[in-house]
Image 1 (tube, rainbow, N blue to C red):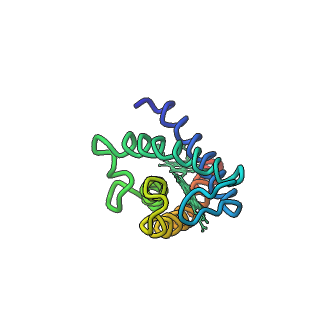
Image 2: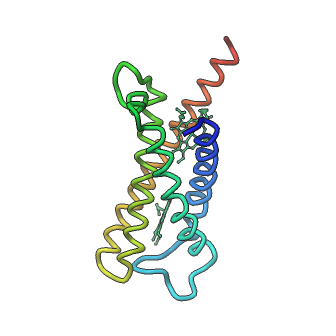
Image 3: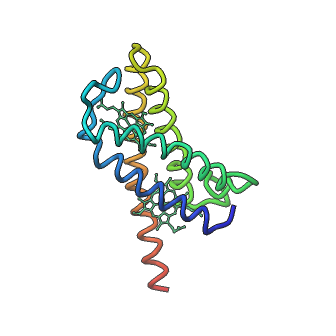
Length: 145
Ligand code: HEM
Ligand code: HEM
């Protein structure tokens, strides 16, 4: 895929995940979408479903053709690349676990998937903060050089 196209996917994912994380305190759905759920709950489901395919396409396009080595620990990847690789995994796992909750709504399994989704989302937040710090310090280095 062309670099400009993947950059647009990155922008979409960054905006979507900031929205999904920032509004999550107003999302409360234990076993199913509650009747009379609020705007942020419906927005979370709709935009979460949107983020899932975008995350998969973005991850596959960056990791295919041997380029995964830039994001896996080893000679070709620095710490920034490894953080980016973890973030790609985290966004896909967060989307998949959210989608599993949706598909299994009403069952006890949905409650379990919600738990995995929340753990994945917390990992995404932690790695995401590391990502923003890593790329910010990288940009500072570029300015200094
Ligand atoms: C789930 C959300 C995100 C994912 C999965 C993600 C993933 C990535 C990946 C894989 C790269 C490396 C791209 C490459 O090697 O070509 C990258 C670069 C970068 N990311 Fe993110 N990112 C996310 C969110 C963010 C956010 C919220 C910001 C800023 C507030 C950000 C800022 C940057 C910058 C400045 C770069 C380096 C410039 C570039 O290659 O475009 N990212 N990101
Ligand atoms: C990749 C996209 C997604 C991101 C970044 C994301 C992010 C989050 C975050 C940050 C939370 C709050 C976790 C906490 O309470 O600590 C959450 C909760 C939740 N999300 Fe997502 N989510 C995504 C996709 C989805 C999808 C596709 C669905 C279902 C269709 C979904 C359903 C839920 C549910 C049911 C909860 C629990 C709400 C509650 O009862 O407190 N999410 N999500």
